[in-house]
Image (cartoon, rainbow, N blue to C red):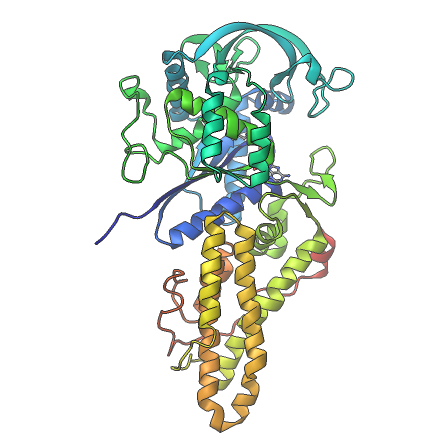
Length: 526
Ligand code: ME8
């Protein structure tokens, strides 16, 4: 009986088009990429979405500062992100830009729908506004010297008409949803944070800015003098790319209760399986977004992964401090895969981590000394002792360890613990190195009576390398493709196939080290 492939919809935040891509952006995108590759490898049909957030005051001001039109800045920066992601082997399926005509139409249809359903009202609002944070603060929230409490920037007193979304009306439903779905926000610390936030009554959410003050946005369909608040505009990107809202079909298309066999809105990718975000935009994604969706009568995303923060040494990365780590510069020196490995392996999902050249080297050496060493000794022994052909012999010397590693890897990936999944793969490589030491193939090679045992040793090592290539493909696509090629396997097999595909008789190539020693310039630099 055949069934249609599992569908998996993964998203990253859409990054502000006002700044350059850095390793923080790269990290979220690597995580999403590893999950996307993992699911594709297992035969799922995947929509992996990333893109740029192009409206709002931040963009308008950056464009003014550079003396260019906002659209020109966005075109340029969207190009920079696309270039970065291509250089870093990101396999996104769709790069969305919030200045696309399609997105603008979906945002207007979405807010119109909230309005039609009676969840939007206009009110005079007076408060302390921070341009930097693009939001109001109450008197009580202000920092010393009347500054915003987050970035410490100046605030201004503003009184204006705003459109509000009745967020407070959905607080109870949201709390119940979080209680009923303990895995909805991962990790648990973030879930607790959101629950803590929801202890207090929610205020309604301002969803507009007067066009007179901020022209760079999407006008509200029911009041063209106001543009959509950039956070709402940005969140809707996930719907735009999913195909869940067809502006031309609104409002006839309301209700959206036709759900297909996967639980998705018919004909669309919605709901997202995982929204991957940093901890900075947790409230936006775990409170604003779900209440907006409830207001629009749409299903909620299935999971939210909110990871921790990369700092440099013990300092926050920031343009003004000049310590922003450029992922493309690192890639030039060490290759995309080594960078992917470091970031994905180093940060336990959810905790903060510190980027340091020393830690980078430690993680790199783990790769070179454990996996690189296993590959190079296995390949060179097959070349030396068996003329470069994988022997036809029993290859189950590490079968149990491999199937255990595969099982643990699956469990960790499904639980979004990518760093742990990679740890399980590396443990298997370590075990395989132990197997080499224990079997001493060099001694087996000296004794003709041991020929059959040597065949088994070499076949088992080739097998474990194929399994490792399959396990590590999502993290290091280019190196693992290379490893599979050296083992004479055309493509990296799936995790189901890796323990079984025919290897006997395949011709191997030793090649240069998979993870060469890094030169001094890398050791010193960050
Ligand atoms: O917030 N460590 O865009 P943004 C880890 N446009 N992750 C980091 C990081 C760091 N030091 N710095 C950035 C926005 N990130 C909005 C999002 S979504 C509908 C709108 C990552 O360019 C992390 O994923 O400021 C964080 O959430 C995101 O970049 C913020 O990117």
